[in-house]
Length: 202
Image (cartoon, rainbow, N blue to C red; front, side, top):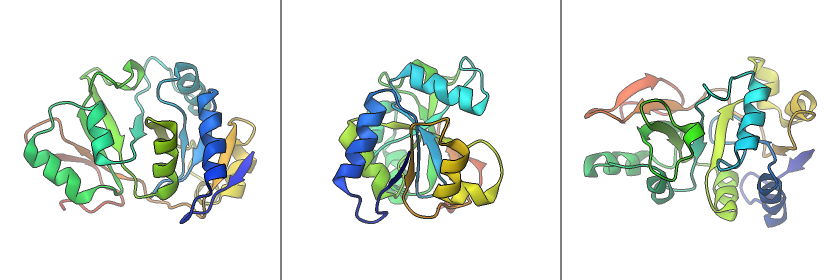
């Protein structure tokens, strides 16, 4: 099902549809400030396993990131954030970055790596932010399978390709083509793992 949501002034009714879908174990395709991605409630293991099936990934080996609505929300799912690291995060968030951080107690086990870390984003996208606030906790975020740039940016084509696999596809306007910049913050100095849309160093 294709759901149109205004990219700058999201309709509360549309956000509620998405939230109700996620609460019922649904999987959605939704926009971020970089590319469109697959998402579900991070605390619904069956929904996470559905995404693994869509992507052809073994759930026992899957390690996905998730999106939070704000930096303060992010800190609920991490631990050991030093003052310098917090200041750095505050200077770039919300924005097109994924930060690898020490996972907190609230982070579901299926999303943690063997090193007990997790990837977290705070996208500069109001649809994301409204969705997470209305749901009450983060949403899983992973890239759509495949490398066809045309369907990765056009919600109508995404609906044609993935509509039978997911419960809802959000049309929040054209998507981007460049993923987030990934920074490992688990050591003393942040390490660039993937160069993406976010400028690094800041």
